Image 1 (cartoon, rainbow, N blue to C red):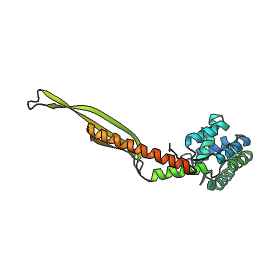
Image 2: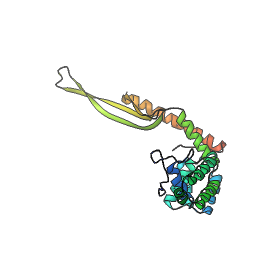
Image 3: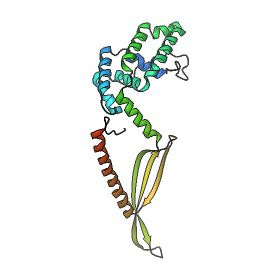
Image 4: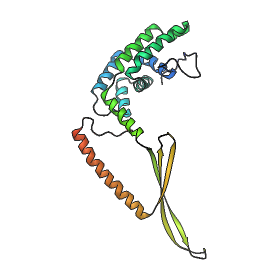
Length: 232
């Protein structure tokens, strides 16, 4: 994270303006010190990136061009947090902030403001591969509960005789616990008891689903520009 410079009168809310928050301001100040040539190279690479630009791939591209980690993190936050439609509003908030009092003008100089505006103009665009990923992620988030994990708990249940003094056998039981994040962002889980034969059915159906997905992936990779994407 870029070194924080606290410029706010309203430190309780962290609000600088309608489009700007303290954390974003810290990042923009760090971005203003990144060489223009590095940001131009990054923008060119983002324009040429095919398919779906995942967060991992985005981080790789940024750090290839901006090896300094705090600066790279500030660039990454800016790309994720600033859309093209926000740039004008952010610039207006920065200018208004400078005019509030002389101290703000010292902390955010005219040169720093000009550097921020120039770098936002270079960096912030509607990159096709990044927009594809954002659309896919939004579609996933809005179409059902999101998987977070699974536990398979196996144990043996004793079967006693009528006197409850002798164990006559053991019954294997399996509990599958599916953990998920609901549409209201709460973390939930559902538990289902399975027999061994039930587990065999689940495995067979999962293998069928995997084969179907492999067939669909071959079709997508061969015919669609973005191909197959795995959301992170």
